[in-house]
Length: 270
Image (tube, rainbow, N blue to C red; front, top):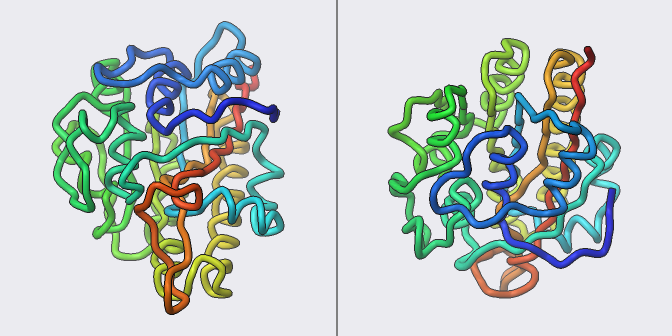
């Protein structure tokens, strides 16, 4: 499913996920994405999703996605909805993920620079907890997602490496105990900063992200057949090359701000 639509913001994702799961929107969230909600309705009808799995690779820009489509083959063949979005400023990880799961602007959620305090406003995770649902974040120990949503009655699985993160995420899929699983992978971002967005090593990490998402999607399709499930390949911001062939982000420029999320909804087999 793809169409020429007005580019929305990652501020619209939080309320969209709330809509998908049929829970109250958290207090500061902007309106949901009409396109994502319409897709959810087309697949689930009058039902809602009882599982959401969000795979969050860091820093993959829309221009990279368009320039190197072969790297995203494993994602493309498993997703139906392409959702073009704007990041928020400054386009750095804690600011953008702070917005993605609160639905609020940086001025509202309070992270306006590359810092990682615990967010104290209402979040998607708080809304899930109030609804009696169970959420988990799986991320590396230095990451924003391992820090900014702490101090909530939910599960945190924090490791030193991407390999450990992904192994735990696979385990959680098999255990099938959480209503929302958020998985963060840092490998493209950390490599891109060193060798540039189009460095061979960096592009290899995108391929790795794509394969990992494909693995998770296949596991979900097999092991969550009894659930209505929404799966997302959802980055936070883009990137650009700087002097010396390294990579960076954080500016109000298309390369850093334009991203695309990809989604697939699986209807329960009943």
